[in-house]
Image (tube, rainbow, N blue to C red):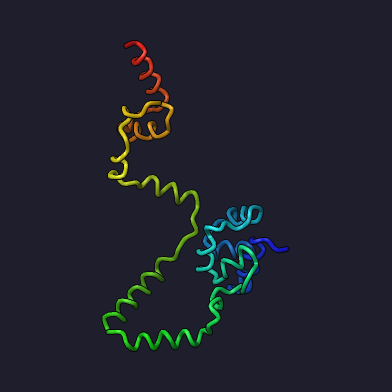
Length: 177
């Protein structure tokens, strides 16, 4: 019985001509370590659509082994008939619509999707706009200093806050009152 990792390697070799694991990692734009982790844990389901975009393998086939390997033949319609349908639709488009579609295709070809990694999510969290952080509750309204949201709010309110040191000062002041 093949696992999802073995099916991924098979699809990359047959559909894109990848010769080894490092070529597959390069093709998917992931590190060799990430690919090695997939070997023991399986291919994450959240990455299947991005893998489909890069190598053209059906996400259902990679995950379960059911259906065709190639995602393009999933609909049962041949490539030639799809091309004819697109050509017929383009004949009835205005020149402006055709230009907009061409511009969209250029932009999409430049922006290739990347497989998500934990590092990417850290960058997203760091780039949280000030308007989002302004909607959080003020530190004084939260009851416990051990609450993680309170710590985050303190860091936002006072960039020079040093964590546990400030908490102890606050507790001493509160107990002496």
